[in-house]
Length: 146
Image 1 (spheres, one colour):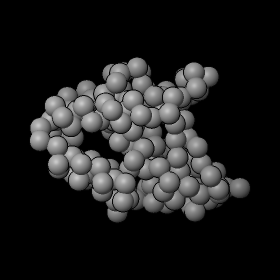
Image 2 (tube, rainbow, N blue to C red; image 1 turned 180 degrees about the vertical axis):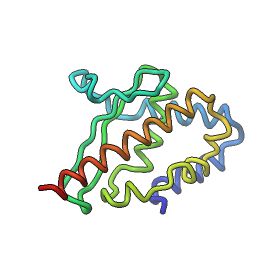
Image 3 (tube, one colour; image 1 turned 120 degrees about the horizontal axis):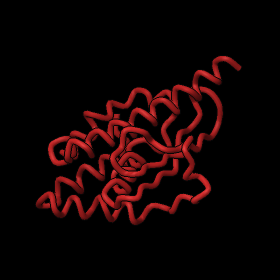
């Protein structure tokens, strides 16, 4: 259920020779992300469970299951900012019902991230995925109760 953009990222990771190059690529992805407005870096947007400071702000276009999910994200750690960019590649532009159907562990496993991140970073990625899923579920619940 990968998006073409994520398939391209997986192909890029396959092409890169070693993990140092892959880390550099992830960091460059983070640097290329649009900056997040400082006004959005508030407690309600902070992701708990990350060793670094991480903020995710949802941007949802439309209503109900067919609404499209997007988000802004930022971190005080460059590698984590890059991991946010990886998650953006995986999730942005999907319908809300698709977001909940993504097997993030399997998709990220295609990149080998599960084998090469520290346990703290892996926990942080899981916390970010959980936050994305919670934001999506909250939107769907609100739409169902409207």
